[in-house]
Image 1 (cartoon, rainbow, N blue to C red):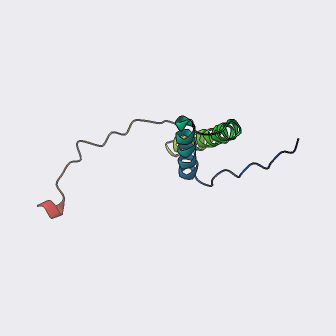
Image 2 (image 1 turned 90 degrees about the vertical axis):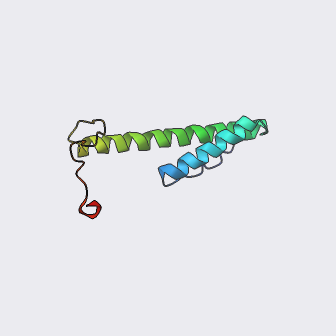
Length: 87
């Protein structure tokens, strides 16, 4: 059995997500032959893993940037002074 080379993963999270969404649409349409469905599923699984890893890396970077503690975004309501241009 000859293995075909796997296509490279997209260079960005957004590109991987776009491709994954297209695969899901195609599979949900139910028009793919069996072999193409299996190949699409395999590619989708690889893209999903790639996206999850990218998100995990981004979260880790945020934790480092926030000195190890993530917190909810809460704009400072006490800092609502009007701009000089509004005066």
